[in-house]
Image 1 (spheres, rainbow, N blue to C red):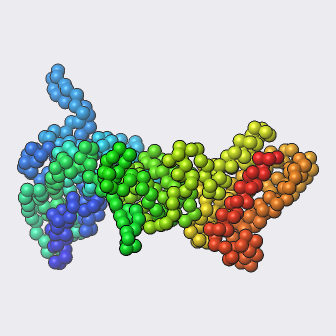
Image 2 (cartoon, one colour):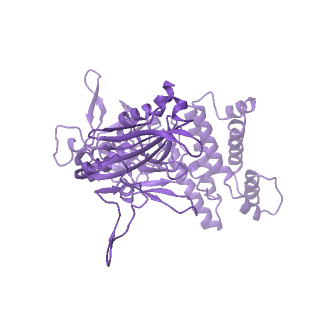
Image 3 (cartoon, rainbow, N blue to C red):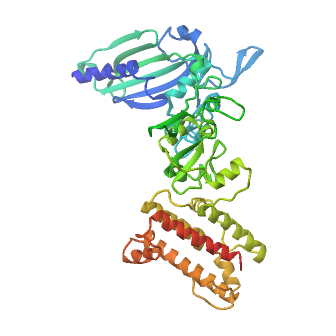
Length: 533
């Protein structure tokens, strides 16, 4: 009976709206939910700070979004068009779209909120996301599948309110039901009201005598969330002050690492600024694994010879012409990397006795068009050259174009960052896709005058033989061995066949890094051969 009375008087729900609602990381702003076994309905709007007292004259909702849209108001012969018809200093955050059962109703966010936060809608996740400067996304608004139940991350709600210098008005209507009469449940009819500076609600309970007799209670009211100062909204020109990390730039006479800020305004340059500070172009060293994060998201990041780019958001010039480290300039880390990325790079920062590569030095300080000395860069460069060469000489490409879903297999071919088996297997798989699976079998078959076994390597061999090409055997042998390495390694469970094939490439004798580097060298020799025939 005590539990029934607590439920009837909605003690838990009162505690929720008093202590938690509007303070959680996600705020329910529309739709319904089950809250402590009661059916809860929510809505949200903004209100001018000067009008808060006027809406706290009673506990009822001041708007429910049903008639807040644009239209005309007036009477007689005078009508005035308004961008929204809500009154009393209230501004909609949401609009309830009623389609009268023809198509499902929905709730729409105010376009101003979407545009100010530069949000985009993901139709699969039913959420709005902000695109952050580091290229990552942050969920800002969640829709349930009914398209009427909406939650907004508190951070975005408060930023918006601060920018507009308006208070957030949260409405709630929570209803509990118990079967039977008041007398049967040992309960009494009641009515209570609570009001303070930011919460106003009433709760009442009675019984319903028609239909299925039951006891009910209604907790209805509103809550005010006051905005922060406008300079705390986080939008330009009130963005948070940027933080700059320090990075290792060398060691002192005792062998201790020395660090310095990457803030470009604190560094020396060619014009005499900050003469006692490290030079803007001081090289900073990182473990090669720093690139792993970007390799795993080829749809977002592009790593090329000397560059790391996040679409058109940011680009960092890097010296990626070493097998075991990556180098970036101290000033570039502060100027070209977003704040969150600098913290990530710092975790891979190392002290090193390496120097800038010859390629980077010639490009950056001697203005020479120096080609990369790294075999992975050379392979990708020569792959494109082969396609162009065959198109010009034979009128068709020896390699079929990669589909959008497969393009990463070419762009990610590299000397491995680590000696891990999974990375090695993945790179072998990608190499086979671009070098063997992409061979243009249809065109190779077209020019053959005799039958040969099916398979792209067999057809390439037949084409080379019919065209009297010399010294092709070593390349055909290489292609077959690489294909066998893929088939016995990533295509099936590894066993004795894989071990036998792997030994041909010195797996177990050399590191997997060195093994794949040698494979790439042979693959590039094959590409160079294709440009000689």
